[in-house]
Length: 458
Image 1 (cartoon, rainbow, N blue to C red):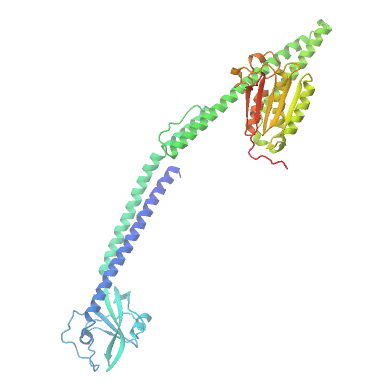
Image 2: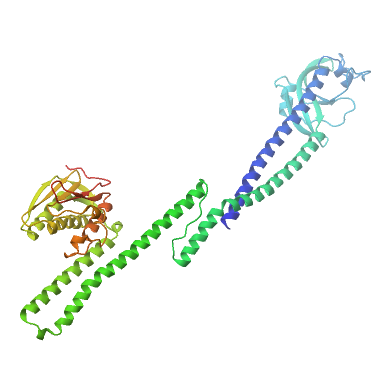
C-alpha cells in the first residue's frame, strides 16, 4: 500500500469517524427528546386523573367495592392498568393487553417504591410506561396500588428508524467525501515528496549531487526540502573535497616518485659515478624515501575516521613535555622555553601527540639558529611562538589547508600536510587552530581544545 493511499484512507477514516460520532450524538439526543416528550404526555395524563373519579368510572371501584360500569368519565380515558399490592392486575375498561409487572412495579404498589418511567413491549408493541403509587377501595377495603399509564411508541420507533437511515447515509456520504478529499489533499501535499523522490532517484542513477529541489513556502515539507538541499550541498562539497584530495595527493606523490625513479635510473650506471656522486645519490634517495614516508603518513592521518577510535583521558601537558624533549634532540641549536599547566581532557592521545609534534616541528623548521621557541599550555590552549620570519597575512588563513605551501616554504622539504593535520585534530576535539603574527616578529600558532566532557584533576 502506497503512502499516498494510506494518507487518503486515513483522511477518509478521520472524516467518517467524526461524522459517525456527530451522527451518534444526534441520534441519542433525538431519542432522548422523543422519549422525554412521551414521558411528559404520560405525566399529563396522570395529572388529569389524579384528582378525579376516573378510577371509579374506568375500573368500577366504588367505595363499597362494587363494579358498577362508568356512566360518563370526566376525562378521555388513557391506556391504564392498576396493580394491587398482591400483584393482581386490572385494566381500564376497553383495554385487553396487560402490562408486564416486575419487582419495581410491585414495590410501588406496596408503597415502598418511587414513581418511575420505563419502556416495555405491551401487546407486541413498544411503549413507554409511567408507574406511580396510589390508593384504591377494593372489595370494601382501602389498599395501596400502582397506576401504570401506557403510551405506545410506534411513532417514535418509526421516527428513529428513519433517523437512523438518514444518519447512515450521511456517514456513508462523509466517508466518500473524506476519501475524495483525502486523495486530493494527499496528491497536493505529496508534491514536494515526489520531487525529493525524483531527485534522489536521479542522483542515485547519475551519481551527480549538484541537483537541487525547488522549495517554496515555510511548512514542514518545505523545511524537509531545504534540509535535503543542504544535505546535497554538503555531499557535493564532500565529493569535491575528496576529488581535490585525491588529485593533490597524486600530484604530491608524483614528485618524489619521479625523483626516486630518476635516481634509480642513475644507480643503474653507478660504475660511471665517482664516490662523491654516489654518496649524494644515496643521500637523495634517503631524503626522498623519508619524504614519501612522511607524506603517506600524513595522508593516512587525514583519512582516519575518528568515530572508530576510543576516546580516553589524555594528559595534554605530558604529551607536550614529551614532544618538547623530542624537539630539543631534533633541533639542538634552538632554545625551547615551556610553561605547562596540568591539563586533562577526553580525547585521542595518538592524534593529539601527532598534532603537537607538527606544531613544534613547524616552529623548529622556521626558527633562526640560536633563537628560542616558546611553548605555553594553559586553559586547554597550546601556544607555540617562534622567532622566525613569520607568516604573511595572505597565507595565515590557508596554511592549515591540505597541501598548501606558502611561497617561502616551497624550497624547503615537506608535504604541506603538517598544519592541516593539526586543524583536523583540533576539530575532532571540538576546538580550533589559528595563526597570528607574534609581538616582536615571528609566528604564533594556537591550538585550542574545548572537549565536551573535560576531566577534573584530583
